[in-house]
Image (spheres, one colour):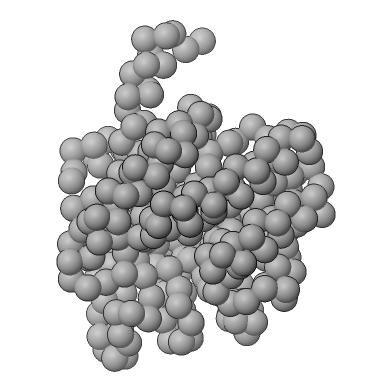
Amino acid sequence: MVTRSALLYLKKLTTRFVAGETIDEAIETIRDINGRGCTASFDHLNESVSSAGETEEEVREYLNILGKIDQTGIRSNVSIKLTQFGLEIDPELAYKNARKIVEDAARRGNFVRIDMESSQVTQLTIDIFKRLRSEFGLNDVGIVLQSYLRRTYDDAVDLLKIPARIRICKGAYNEPPTVAFPDKKDVDDNYVRVMKLLLKSGVYHGIATHDPKMIDATIDYMQKESIGKEAFEFQMLYGVRRDLQERLARDGYNMRVYVPYGKHWYPYFMRRLAERPANIWFIIKNLFKG
């Protein structure tokens, strides 16, 4: 049981990584991010969707977000998780709900990134993305791949044939070694392999990492291959390595910050810790960094 004082402490801790409970708080955070030379991606937190009615609430929230982006003029797109739109209830429901968001974003000239979740829904997520991508343009909808999954390089090759805009990240879920690389070196090696594949594709991708070694590997490769800074963007989480975010933006790189917000911050925060104990150390380290 969580005591009130413990809950208040956790809430104070998460303010470093969660941009408030309301859309207006998130907008103010994104204004500040834009002022530091970075773009953003909205993520509405809700890890407890369990009914079709709740998925409709998520659709309304994201349609509201897209409208607010237009009204305020902030520089941001949106990221969605298909489980919030009903993936674990009925994949067809998730597709129909996600389609409403992508359709509205496309009409507004904005972009929707479909987040990748646990390996249990990787193929379903890719299948729904492919359906959406067949209906909408390259710059309307994109997807995320995780370098710790053994399947990811082949998935990247396959998705680039469409083509697709991809965000590559390392991955944060607790997966069995038959599915994911258990050793960091293998995860990093796969990350670099996929990063090179993406940068050479000629499509605008997101290189999502807080790891200076992965950032250096990306910059070294783009310089070696004469790939321009405008050809891709770095991406990081809100509240993590803000000093590095600002430095990359000052150096002329496109820098996007992933901004979670919402009342369901507690399950989001605790799930991140439960999934991978290493996340605890990751959070503690970043409390003492810029």
